[in-house]
Length: 251
Length: 251
Image 1 (cartoon, rainbow over the protein chains, first blue to last red):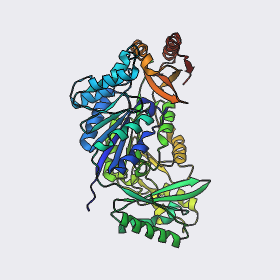
Image 2: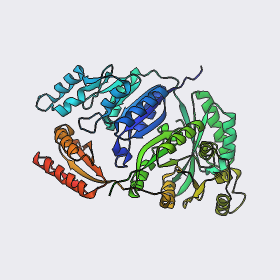
Image 3: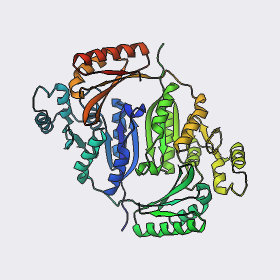
Image 4: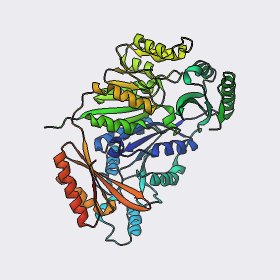
């Protein structure tokens, strides 16, 4: 079976991430959950709330990757400009989406609470389809191969599960991790030799400092479980022979 | 005094971030510390350990921003390809840098420990200058307006402090934060009106869910402290009048 890669790019829209005030918590969730359905996160960009930047970045990325996911900027305040930017990127109009409007009206109940600002959250670009928001109702949307989500992690997670069936994935990437007490510099040469014997796998080496001790995490990635297990066992053998106390994990 | 913006872009190089295995911890540190010296982080990209991607991304970003900082991929293992990619991006040769080599040799002491893999860490592109690594010796480097750092946060922080005097900053962005118990949808309209009266400030609105309660963080950013204080006090007045229990923070 030939592995087919389906790629995705995440665009994090938000001054609050770029200022260092808020730490992004969506990249890791999306990376892991996309991979489970055979979609590989190949790039992520963090960009400011500037319309031209959003338009240019979306247009570049939607041409380059199979799927694009954006987070942030779809709330009720003046700095929520993502929906308008998407309409501009796709060259379509934007207006009140009846289904989105009805959902929000039902949610707020009292029309007095359904302020003009909240009504803005029903503005969806033409040709887009809604992405359900089981947490706080205000929907995201899909336009072309771009999925536009909220920024709050709890909502991102719920939205992801509500649209993931629309994604057509390829072959998921599997991994094995081998931890060793040896530092990178000691194992680099046998590791490079292993990598050249297993060119179908991607072997990454990550130094770690825990409780004042250096160790190394070696991650083997690939789409063929048999090859992965073979490579991982071989690596464990090499490290054991060097006194590296290897520890194999199934992920 | 006219505010002058000096921009930076961060390029995070690493499959381990894109796979969701490791969470980036450098963006927030760099954003805050760059801003203190008047350099504004305007974009961040997370890219895989693929040479062509690194080359293209660096060349795009170094033309677009005043400074570029990269993290990751300068260790001793086969997957550490950043230095070679930088040489390719700048069209220069790469070879053993004598000063880097001497530092590493002194550090490892015993020439037997200074393995060929570790000697790779002394390979620096021609025309680059070293960036000191007070933690683990193996240096980063500066080439043109690009600063190439390690990926481990402790080393990134130490390297940043060792090269930050080389950056020529503009006007730092200051901020004030006002927290309110009111949800975004309730305050969106007066907030938009305030933003239009203070077009020299950038007002961001960030919903938060804490202990099951919704609240909103409003962040005013700008380069003029007097205008910021004025805008923040006005916002506090508006929110107090709406029963929003505003709380003003000096950052």
